[in-house]
Amino acid sequence: MKKINKLFSLICIVLISVTMPINYVKATDKTEGPFKLPELPYSYNALEPYIDTKTMEIHYLKHHGTYVEKLNEAINKYPELKDKSIEDLLTNLEDLPDNIKETVKNNGGGHYNHSLFWTIMGTGKGGEPKGELKEDIEKTFGSFEEFKKQFKTTALERFGSGWTWLIKDKDGKLQIISTANQDSPIMSGISPIMGLDVWEHAYYLKYQNKRGEYIDNWWNVVNWEGIQSSYT
Image (cartoon, rainbow, N blue to C red; front, top):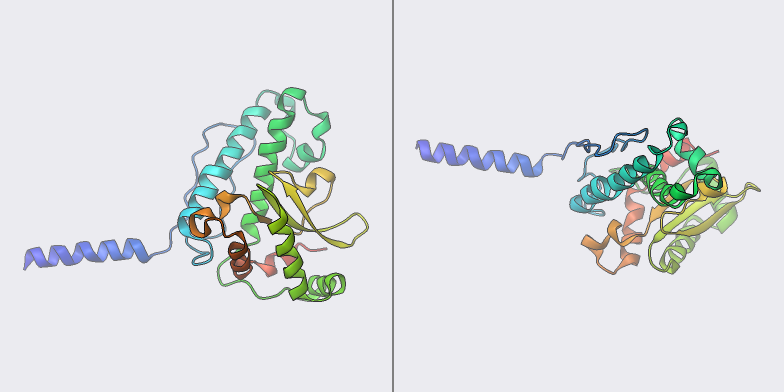
């Protein structure tokens, strides 16, 4: 009987550990510096089944974590830059020392892009935007469904790695654009409204080469409430 009770207890512990939400785990900063890996606003498994747990964990800890590490390594070489925000650095790349310019562009871009990406997703989200954002999307693209169609087409046409964005251009008009690698609209002085990571590391474990399927499923986790709250 004792053996049965012990086995039962062990099974319960395993079941609880498998089914309970995976709490946020702060990545250990390998390099001290002004930039930190931001906390995720949800657990690694929160976006299941659309974005799998293992992809979220690797994407966040390994990929985003490395961008922060490399960015800090570059900035630490020039103490006068440590008080600069990531936006300041990326909108003034031409002013940076030549030997760190490319590093800041790539890794700073990765840090900025991913910091935004995590906030525009969430569990139990999806649906459609509301209010002014919805009105502007329908006015610009004809309908929300047409917007999604054009957004997907742009994301599929991005050759290799990069991002697809919804932005408001300098004339105040909504636009769908794509950038290569970790380039970001912020580098041109434009704050993006939302962006989709189409690097293979964002979807390959679950979707392999089916980028279109990843895009279709991604709409189910888009946090329109969060996007709308910062939309102006």
